[in-house]
Image 1 (cartoon, rainbow, N blue to C red):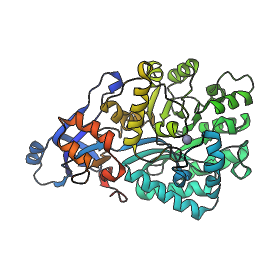
Image 2: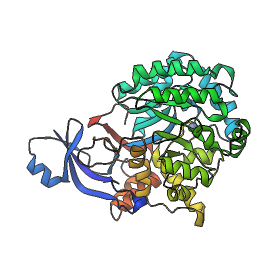
Image 3: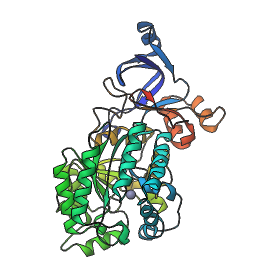
Length: 430
Ligand SMILES: [Zn+2]
């Protein structure tokens, strides 16, 4: 067994439902075979387990490993292409790069870059939008398995609108998706997701084939985009016959349920929110992407009111990096700027959105998301360099809650000193 010492912060009780931040300063977690078997004060656990190996993570904060619910594998090299709205950004920046992943060797390099980006940011679980090419998706699963990331991903499919080298037929989408799922779904920490790019680039037949694949692969997940940009929403509603809103284009193909996660939903109608809440689907909120593309300000209050699950996503490469500290801060900014229409967020809300909310949305709440006994020890150690503003802030914080606010205001990937998945340190962190 291993005894991890540090200041542990987590949110097992949902702050959106009145739950408080849980903190153990000078605490300890006893970990056996990757799982937390006991937690308490450092002094007490050290004296009751004097023989166990000790890992000292004191100084700074220990947080549950981050859960990124929306990040694009092929877009690592596209981060920072600023100044364009969604559809222009896709055509000029993202899609030409996505096409380069037809070369499996190129895709392998990008997969390594993606995993380095995720792990070094403290992300230990991710729902990853894959590539349009099966060999590239194989590269991604292979490398994620080597690193040990808890990854849900799959082949991205489209059969209209996009450049032709990114298109496939409904039958090919099904066949190639099934073959990938057979190779990777449930293997190690990997799970398969069915991923039409967005209904704008998918015919009714393709969405039907996605639905069939979802039925065929037991325990598979579904993810796509929705209501990101007003021009996109108008185009979708123009393409689908008798389609009153964007969500209907998925729902009429049985693609909305408890295992469905849609990115963005910035421009949701109340009918859509009601349906999402009623069917238990989740939304990946990607604040830096929404700001960078000028997509809009996320109506968080309306989502919470309708009982729609929400968690954070980096949306690399429209998002401006892998850090969920930055996404949390931008989420906070948006709600402040929305004034009375916003939902004022506190540091525990931000931690919850970056950890337990994503774990729950991905059906992993029994395994990860907080430091309760029985959960896997997935964690990041936020330990800034001495004398940096974050270090100064943490040392002078009035308590763990105040320290958490400083972590989201000032924390960057460079401040993540170590990352653990199932109790094991992950290579790639600093
Ligand atoms: Zn996206």
